Length: 318
Image (cartoon, rainbow, N blue to C red):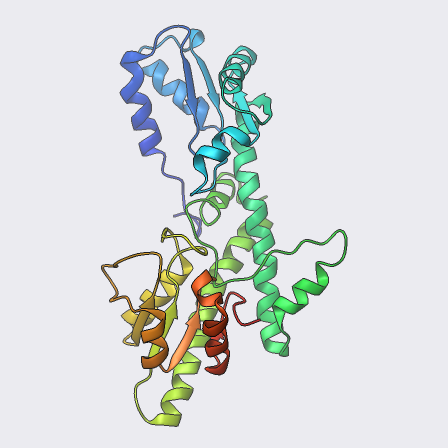
């Protein structure tokens, strides 16, 4: 890590490139879809060249995937795709390949632009969420309902603020912006700040839970139990990668807090004994809603969480 900036690790991509070197023939198409820093496709060409492949006769291109977990087969066909080759001929041939099964548009560019396009898409969302998360901190201090505020602001025809949460997780949005920052930290100042704001929101959420626990302990004289509602990185999935909710629950537990975790989309977790929402509502003293799962949005559950004055980090009780 340089200057607090996580550095990309391309070992797996380059290792996979070396592993196919003995099979690549003149006229073959070599396509990278994995989200990667700008210049990775060129690095792959160098790896193949160093392995003895005549890369002047191989058509190499980058085409970032644009699929949503749970809808992969549909979006693989329906979504527009961006194709960028190392040569114009590679762009054309690889584009023709995707047109055999993609119903959306296949948009041609060069490899570096295609690589940057994927990073730009996810960085844009990260910056937008950071704006929402920063608003949530300002509103908390002023006693303003941030979700109501955003709903009102979004009635403007040219405003579209995303929703705040406990941070940003997943294997894309929480990671990809760092690829841009690592390559050019001097110019990627807004993108880096957005990452830092979203990471800080998770720290802030932990602090708010600790304050609530201290208040509950002062009232009862006992050690309160904290119910962390949600562990996944976004609603209604079982994916825990880079999840701020999981980080919050794990941080509290590691610091000696009595934590019960509710995650209806997984059956077990090595770090937590999972509880049902019903059990948690009966046994816990402090409630932190970390993920907007549909189970927490059910009318009776929502009503109960409002009555219990749950800490709402995702807009369940708004």
